[in-house]
Length: 217
Image 1 (cartoon, rainbow, N blue to C red):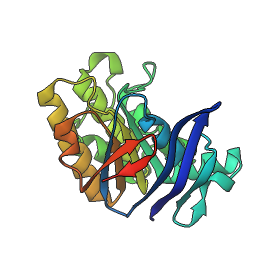
Image 2 (image 1 turned 60 degrees about the horizontal axis):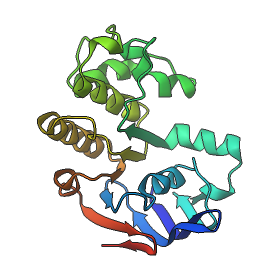
Image 3 (image 1 turned 90 degrees about the horizontal axis):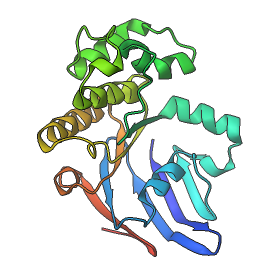
């Protein structure tokens, strides 16, 4: 399932955020996007997921024109095909770890323990037997592992990560990146990472620089 972005442009009022962004991300590929603060890296990720609108160009995934979908159809596409990992973990404090991880499956109407997938994901991210723990009992690194498990539990074709190691110390950040990349490879997902971390970007198959006028290698 290839993600294709063609001549994408985004404006806030009369002010352009970026223009003429064209790129393709192939299945199983890891692409890192870097650029100066304020150039619209997070906005570009949101456009890839259909969470933000754009003013010109197209975003397609496996031939589906994301911009042509209405709100309900886009939400359904996103639930089926996209996983998110953010700098802020967005783990729900009133749910235990297993319930947090199972949220994508529940939104898709699948069983919470569908073929043991939640337990398997927790084991895969190094949190075996911790499904009953509450988020406030976990460290920052453990919370990001929960977020990765949640992003991958429904086996999305496209994984979008926005500064996923920004709140972590260097040692924990390196372990989380190793886990994120390893799990992405195992699931055959495409990974697009927005980051300021040179060490994280260096792990990518391709490194792209976003500017106001487009994207360059």
